[in-house]
Length: 255
Image (tube, rainbow, N blue to C red; front, side, top):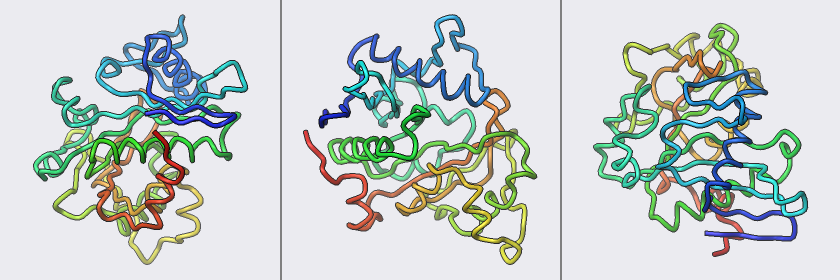
């Protein structure tokens, strides 16, 4: 799966050098910018990595006009790949029984990030385009993954969390839930107290992008002190995406 234009190339990582480029961008964003850390993070080599990297496919956005620099990444894990890894990455935070027992073809998404110099432009569009191509190629029914609010102060983000809980909770047949020992309720305000504009303004761009495509959230939030984030579980039934929405992430798909 590859796509090229005059400026950007979009493809899957093929070599150790490709993977290290992805891990270096993740280090810049998740460690240096957002203050995260992890057991396998290589601070000397400036690589954000974990034990699951070898099992994922890594989607790379490369700026061909800037020394072929990797400027955007997304890592993806199909059901068959998760079987080799022993589990999905997010299963240490969430009960995935509902989606795993649904009989659907699954794809876990993670570690999505874009270099600071490329945010607000076409970079995320290209990554979504590549993700759409991957979904079509592998016949994916349900995409899911974790998206994060920066910081661990729940009171500071109670309005957007409550908005998600009251308006975008996944149907019971697909509803994941934070494991009991980590469970942080998102039902922090009554529905009639929420100012939708305030809630959406405080919501990360990636979460809003999933919602625009008809995405849902799982029940509860996970406070990740290692990464200095508060995580919500997002999932999307690809069969429920309208043709108009589908064109947002498959338009111009090549190869």
